[in-house]
Image 1 (tube, rainbow, N blue to C red):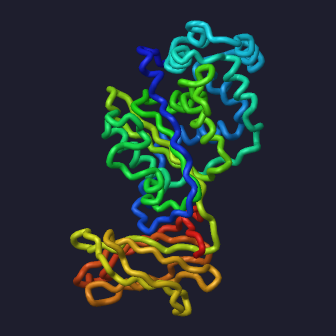
Image 2 (cartoon, rainbow, N blue to C red; image 1 turned 90 degrees about the vertical axis):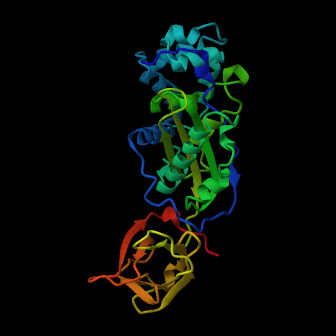
Image 3 (cartoon, one colour; image 1 turned 30 degrees about the vertical axis):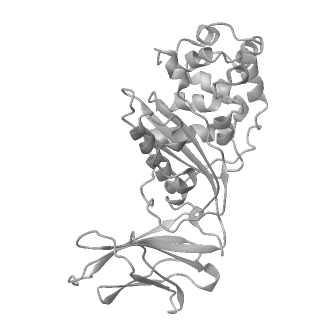
Length: 364
């Protein structure tokens, strides 16, 4: 069990950024395959969905992780009977640790926090969030920004020089309708304790609870469908970490996308202005585009007109092709590393991955 060493720990959960709503979409997909969750990020993600599955019991379950062995009835009775905060109440009843120290520091009123949890959605009324590698990559990238800033910026949601919240999602290839962010900056490396901080939302506010409890609300929101989490080591406090939760509602429309990068197979440099053509099995052109300054391309096509079967990429004065790409209703990511001199078997290498429908783009 972690011990509270200083009230400063109580100040480390920061405010939730305002939600954004837009029809933004991304043209550069730099994030694919870089946002898979590690063990701690998966644990944090599971905690969110466990909370969403049974929100009203979330507080009791959280204190069980701290070692509380009483029944739910006993727990409820204990909190209900304490309508004001008295010095050290949480530590005296649940042990001296980071969570109880923070709640005692902010003088969180037991009966009030219980009442708030009693008013949360009932068990089974919320769908679980889906993990998105793109959103996970966005969260991980911004967690790195926060760590590198090392507390120099007073608001960690707006680190100097970092992309704004909208661009964090867009740059990660997320077609989003709404987006939100939770941050636990420079915290003790425990996903369980960070989850309790987000869920309880202690802080400066009525009865020692943030008003509104934005972190809790975002984890239980019906406005979001997908989530990604980044936890970065090497916090500016020795042994600490920073967790960023990115949450979004994404487009799921009728069109599909085909996207990727074209690079020089020898140098790894982006190939700019290269033409990319997508065909179906009957040689009907589904879409065409050229690569941008990062070598990235995106082709949006209508599933109803055909399935992608072949992509032609024209570079170094000749066309490289790949066939048998996939089936209707899917989105695909294809990287092409093209060399100027043909190799014996093939002069470019292709890697194709099926991409979840969350990455579908909105019909124009």
